[in-house]
Structure formats: structure tokens, C-alpha cells
Image 1 (cartoon, rainbow, N blue to C red):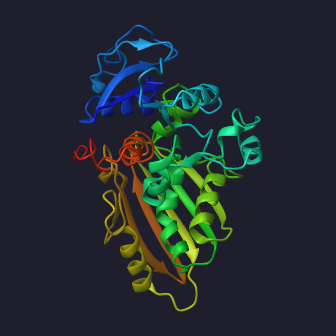
Image 2: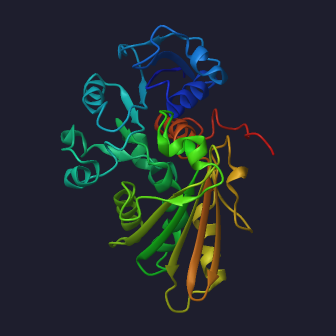
Image 3: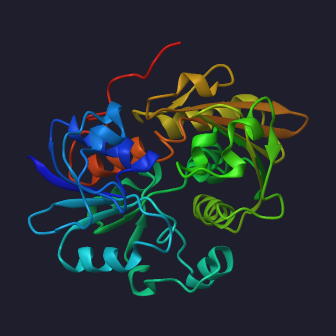
Length: 337
């Protein structure tokens, strides 16, 4: 099998990383890289590490494509996604446009009416560890955000097993690349270096996504308090979730539930010690650790925000969708140390 694939939004961090991965994927022919700027230049001239010689084009031609990876910002590419799906192309959307099932929730958190509400019913939340069967049948895959990926994979097994109360506090810290490639005061080196800051403390856009998926895992509504922090590193993300244990649950029972839930997962791994973000850089791994402190579960997950949080997760979902080994094209570990 050789899948013909295009990447749209290929000059951003996520799109470029995804294009580089797909160019080296043994079952993929990367045929088009699309961007709104630097049209005509080879992608490798814009992002040398991708080693992708294809020239950037202003539009994508869906004819003959098996899939399109859309790395456009939320609200920008939804109309195009609808046209691509109608043309019979499988779409993997990296934006927030199709993650939330409720269009009213989208309008509340993103400040505009949903741009393609008719597609919400068939969009699949493409977190492969939890939704592999649905992904295999999907035409539209909504890739999770980086914060939700870590938060959900940290807390979902405890909630699904009924070991904790349905209330979770998530403290999360991300590298600056999570803010994207476009320069701003909030990502200026002098502003972020040697400094850590919480933001969106009254409610982050990823909050409803986390609540939606944790409620699905628990089988009941889950109240989530989520506070993100920006830390002065290029990439990496650590989420620690805290939840009150139900009576009679101890550390051994908690760990046993995670060992069962994570069994056979190629990227979702249970560790004997708390994970560090540096272990995940350049990989698709989500390292998880469980502990108990004072009647509360302490559930940690570390990922690469541009890897498992975005681009490598898209490749994993693509593999699952087309019946390939989930780790195909993702088997090389990242840099160490």
C-alpha cells in the first residue's frame, strides 16, 4: 500500500514536522505541501530539517489523494475540509474545529459560530489509544490538542475503572513551541526565558475538550479544573492530574488498573517513576506514572507537544485509519540527551 497524501499548512511547526515524517514514511507518497506564504519555495528551504524538496503551493488538488493532513488554524480550513471530505478524501484535521461535539461549546470557547456544523456528527476524536475502532471507519479525524492528549491519557484509566471521584484538577506545563511559529510578545525570548507563568486561569479553550473526553471515559460528567503554564523550553509537555480516590482504593489498585489499560499500547507506557518531558522529545511516546498522596491520585503524563501532541499523533492516527501498524514511520527515538 502506498498512500498519496498532502499536508496543508506546511510551514507551521506542526505541519512541517508532519510533512517531514510523512516524506520518510514507508507506506506514504507525500505529493503536495501547501501554505499561505512562501509559495514556490521548497519546503526544505523554509524548514531544512524536513528534507522535503517539494515546492509549496497555494492550494491543494484533492484528485487522487487518499488523505489530507490539515494543519491550518481553527476557523480557517473548515470549509475546505468539507469539500475534501465530499471529494472522498480522508481528512486529518489538526485544528480545534471538529474536536467538540457541541457547536454551542465551540462558539463559546472560540468566539464564532461553528464553520461547518454539519460535519460534527461524523468527526471522530482521533486519540488512537481510546478510539482506534472509530478511527478505522472515519472520513474526518479530529486530532486532539496537545494539552488534552496528556491530560486525558493521564486521567482516563482511573476514571474508567471507577477508582477516583469524577472531579479532576490538571496542572500542565508546555514548551513555547505550543504557541505556534508566528512571533508574538508572549513567545519573545526575553519575555519567556528564565520565567514560568500560568495563563488562561479562568478557562482555557482546551478545557471543554478534556471534560468531554474524560466524561466519555468515566461514563458520567467529570468536573475539570485545568491550568496551563508556559515554561522556557522549546518543546515538551507535562500534565499532572489530581483526583480524590474512592474508598478502599490504594496505590497498588491504581497502578494495576493502569497496567491493564496500557497493556499492548505501543506508545502509552507506564513508568516506575515520574516522567520527564526530555525523555519524549522527538517521539510519539506518552510516559505515565501513578502515585497516591493523602487520599488523592497523582497521575502524571509527559509528551512531546509537537510529537504525540500533534504531528506524530497524526501519523499514528493515519496508520490506524488505513490498517497499518500503528508505529509505522514512528519507530526511531528522538535525540538523547
